[in-house]
Amino acid sequence: MCRSWMRCTLRLRPSALNIGRDEFIEALRELGVGSSVLFIPLHFHSFYHKALGYGEGDFPRAEEFFRHLINLPVAPAHSPELIQQAAEVVAALLKKHRGATACTKDYGNEKKARTGDTRVAGRRIADF
Image (cartoon, rainbow, N blue to C red):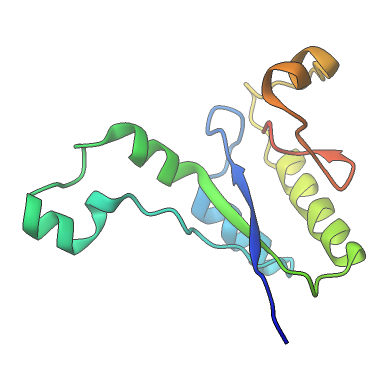
């Protein structure tokens, strides 16, 4: 059987949440939704550190993305119901951990035109 694995990447905005990425991943795990961190900046890998002398602080934008991205696994074998359930868990966690500075306004089509559709399983979750 041939399987193709994909992922749904979420970028957490620290200014909008009162929880960090690692705590968010742990909360997802406790609620039965697996997630991972797949993007690790190259300069964090030992080869690049040893061979080229790169280290923390050399690529701040890459490090910023690293600190805020999580991946939810998606596979052809996942049913639409399972994906919907995962989306609902993510949406509930985002709502629960929304910080004081979080944007609660739905910008509708104006925002969609600028950033693309941010809906997953009918729920807007990527802007938190």
